Image (cartoon, rainbow, N blue to C red; front, side, top):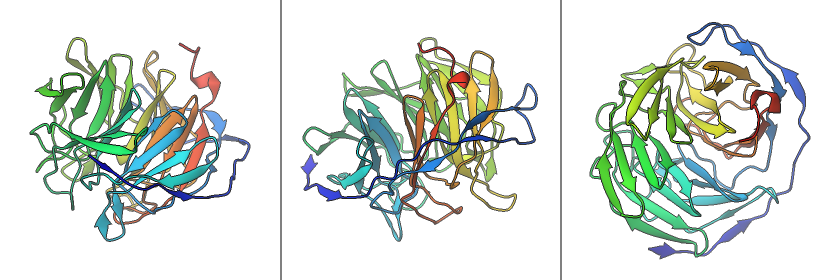
Length: 334
């Protein structure tokens, strides 16, 4: 357990009103061409105090926490907190173990950071670190015994699900951590082994999106029902992507960011939303600043994209931008 001095980083507020725009794109999800959606544009907020990529991020209350990743020249142990209400940042106690490409979730007021890499994308770690915002302290919990990085991490009914990622090769494995018992067990493997994936949980179901395997980006989407342990293949992403993130917004899945591994070697600007009831992907407004290795969180229907690299590979930024997902795409509140 470690604690440290907080260092406020005062930044001016730059909140702006949403603008209405229309986007369209060619191509399609598995059931047919994606429908174009009218939506607000991505708009900027105060940049973070650090330029990073391959971070972990999660929200607790009015605060967004982003952890680890790469800073220029090193793997970071830094932790920064963004106050949504004041549009300002501060640095908090660093992690006990510096990691890039970690899985990160929030649960009952705590931040959990699992796995990741200590250096380059080789092997991975199996450590689990927990942050308590009330005391600004970290605790090291029981490791899983199955090292990985660039995996999906979700929490469902008091259990962490660490899914896929990279060991020495792409993984299809599922490791489950019981928070109350501080104990790991193995779950049902995915059908498709992959790394640099994104995920979102809606109720007892976990959606695992895209990723890469052996140098190729994937569009594949699978869903795990944590009650039955069964995986189901769903309509694929509109854009094959890896190094991106996803978030569940009012029982819809929003995917943003990523990097191409060919096709011009660019970061990915298109943003898409999945309706699990209609089993259909639709396009949202493209990112203002396309990035990979970013954090993606939401509060209500507002989605925040935090930090990440504007170019493929070793690039870094402190950029923060938001998008308000149109109510008409989200259905009734549940």
